[in-house]
Image (cartoon, rainbow, N blue to C red; front, top):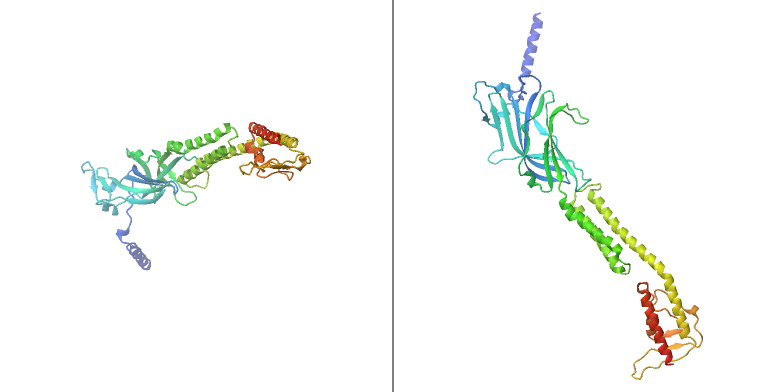
Length: 427
């Protein structure tokens, strides 16, 4: 019996000695127990004073935020204390409990300071309520989708949760002021329409495929709607005008081929350059945006006009080939009628200027000995019909498709026949 009592005393001494090995200053303050039981209620308020930067490529948002927390600790209640709030030094929180709240989307956080850090702590002893406020600059992740760019709307979420306590130990709720913004905040971001919407307090906030217990959370949404009027003026209207110029060329006659082709090619190249500038200023994505689809159809439209013009030119050439062949046949008959079976020389003038002369064979000229080509400078090139300088041959030069109007060819034929008749009259 005495042995059992002795062993029990030794065990109690060992346990008490082990518990005393941890100094009291290293023990974490305990969470205050609410008077009515249940989770401790913590009030939260946000005031957005400035939006510093919206990064589209890295998808984050920099915001200046004044955050306010409030909670109740019944251990400091003094019913006899006067009404009012007592300012406290921030070192008081080193030995008392404070909420461990953070943003789920946080990338970076910076505190502001002048002479001292911009933060404060107040206590109302009448009801034991603590109020803590501080100013900070935070960078928040903001996943964005640019499928409808520049008509897109982005929503950046701000989710505040407790790091340690679950929903049964701590609950979050909005204070009376909730989420507020600076009056002139809209002027700081001229590229967007800004709206901030506080969400309801969430009792159950869990992550996917993780072992964390459900925790209370407060959610707010920053909605950024892009102003697209500038994009209409600088991107869409110029591209529409370029397509209109290319479309207007369809109503022109196909005769000015070089000018019409140059105009269409110029509009195509201008559209491509404009698309390159817009793409350089757009967010970098691995999928097509609204501007990509728009300029794709603009470029296809210009290419289609070029293909249409080429088709029209080919059809016109095909229709003019029979008339060209008939003209060649008429000119061959003209040469056979007036220039066959003669052998004459035309002497130079007396002033010594070397004038053209012709040598014609005594035999009739057979049309099978002629070779007429579109690329030759004269219709009549043969060993039996020659010219020293080719002046008469230049009269018949009208074989290229670009100089094929019927009126001009008719005038050339009449002029050549008159020259030949005058020449034969002198013989």
